[in-house]
Image: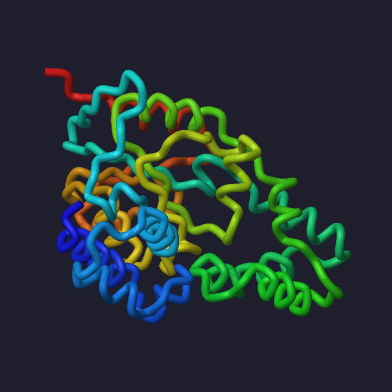
Length: 283
């Protein structure tokens, strides 16, 4: 292990995540002196468990911090699209799953609250909890207070309402056989793992997962694209984002990425269009 290179990668990843050394120490449950020494390259062969904890706190992979390449999926030959993309990021909500309207309606019915009030209250706090600056317990408390009920569990309503988009699941599985793939999602803490375990999101060995609640940034903020590009380990022009929100796609284009819009209301037609765009260069 090259301690100096590791320290530089760690420092770059920390700064890209917008964290001070003190912030990272708190998130990774690490002493300040240990982190400072690792960043300086002063610790020979630091514990792999320590590096794993740091990677988790930064929302990156162990391979990224170690400077190693993730092993390809069995039988995968990495290619690129005609537009030059080698790494494909998939959005989750609105692409791999849909949930919004049904979850709002279920919560409105359970609490005898007008649906428009539920949705307005939800969006008032959504960015904060997806950015990780508000905990789920605080979000539940704030949302309950806003709509005038004693308590609620948003994750329960979400998980009961979320529905997979089968066409996109198949596309993602196919893409993972030809490209490096990742998830880039604005999502609340713990939700992504729950959906992977429950089968609402394909439980694949993703090359990169950028969970907004772990990296402290949400789309369409420029910071989240910087973090994602760094973790992908390719040039911005070699990244493709598939997303249902035009604001997110516009921001990705400004970052130099390729983009494709997914229309969740016409999944079959939209998936066919995306599949055609992802056909790899074979010569």
